[in-house]
Image (cartoon, rainbow, N blue to C red; front, side):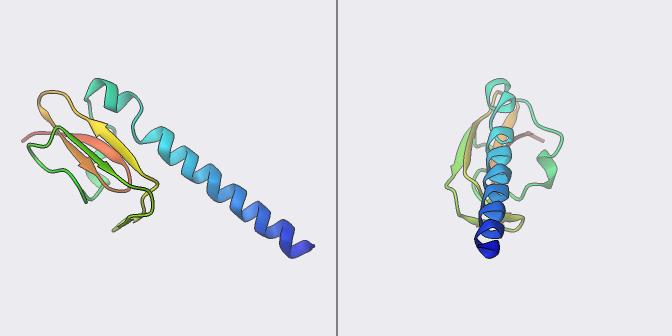
Length: 92
C-alpha cells in the first residue's frame, strides 16, 4: 500500500511538471512572435534560422531531456526553434 501511494504521488508530480512545460511552451510567445527569456538555452531539434513555424511530438529525446511536445509560429524578424520547449529567436 505504501509503495502504491508513493507511485501515485510520483506520477502526479510528473504530470504537473509536464503540464507546466506545455503551458509555458507556446502561450504568449506563439501569439506575439516574441522570444522568451529562456529562448537561447533550448537546443533546436526542429526549426532553424529562416523557419517561421515548427513543432515537436511528446516523448522526443532532446539534449535537455524528453520533450513534452509543443509548436510555435513566429513573427517577422524571428525564427522558430523547437526542442524541450518551442521558442521564437531573433534572426541575426
